[in-house]
Length: 219
Length: 219
DNA sequence: AATATTATTTAGACAAATCTAAATAATAAA
DNA sequence: TTTATTATTTAGATTTGTCTAAATAATATT
Ligand SMILES: [Mn+2]
Ligand SMILES: [Mn+2]
Ligand SMILES: [Mn+2]
Ligand SMILES: [Mn+2]
Figure (cartoon, rainbow over the protein chains, first blue to last red):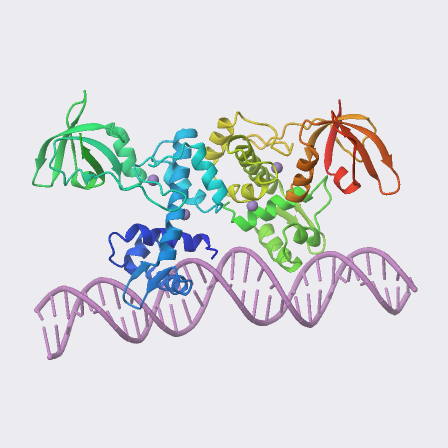
């Protein structure tokens, strides 16, 4: 089963949107892929034909077991390349997503596995996301909550769930990265903004929009 | 000027075939790209439209100055990735061409330059071919001749002008690689085969077909 | 329950890249 | 210099992935 770049991008996006087991809607997928709902419907028919998804008119899309397997391989490649770009080529974390978006489509198991080895078989990418192993198995994630949900006070940043340059650049500016320890000083109900303090730093306030994309674990 | 993968492959092949300044024929290009002459004619019209080639019906194709510039960037990426695969991921020289054929299409100057730096700004790829610098400038090649043309007797291998897995695997089997020193023992006129001897090795005979793809320099 | 709104699908078109078969031009042979 | 051969181009079709506009289905509102 040989997938085109377009098909791979669809499969990966379906995987990303398919939290839990709710089906992915045509509109949501179109938005994620920056395309039109009509195009999604067209592609859905093709992917169903190839048995990569389950799809019935008006019922949304879920990955088949083959589709999930394919998705995990693409995600593996994507995240390994991100590691390479950050660890070896010294890119910063907000620059690598777009490049990995292209590199992920070079399909060679040997290349992927050699790259993983070269990087020391990393299990997390630069954004804290887990990297599937060669068999597509994901290490079970350490428990983490988003910063706007937690009730602990002293926390460490474990991941960021939005790879956009805008958010990552914002976090850079505030000195927040993976492993950063912080303390919650206040939670303002009015707009759900949160006042936090990093070690040796003045307190700062961050919006709910930012907080919900920062994953943390009590320390 | 944003090129598609197909356009890049055409540009690179034209560059490769355009030895000296003879125009590249439709048939030769079709053969090189493993496609049909009719497809070449179609693409030639598009590339002319984009001012990447000079082309008149029945007159063959030559790169324009923009086309040459583009070609050198693609070649640069191709050869840098080959270096990466061999030097860092420990691939052998016959495995890397096809992978680089895909990696070369990731267009990012920053990535390319970082990769070059990471590799120590190499000037030769694993097959002995020169790597254009960031400005597209090629180091002027050290003088070399093909093994079937030279009249010197003690030689060192400097490059291989056919990247096919078949030839490179053959050379591996015979212990011939870049930098290998050899001595010509005899030249048989009948089929232009050549008897050579590597250090500490029994003499072997190689065909003209092989010899003409091995570039050498007197030592 | 009827109506309005939103989500999704269909119909029909388009651009890119390719192909086969047929036509034409260029070149080589007689 | 005709004639045959080879190279190249054109005509018309196909596949993939996309789009807009219109039709239909599902859901929400009155
Ligand atoms: Mn991608
Ligand atoms: Mn990532
Ligand atoms: Mn290529
Ligand atoms: Mn090479």
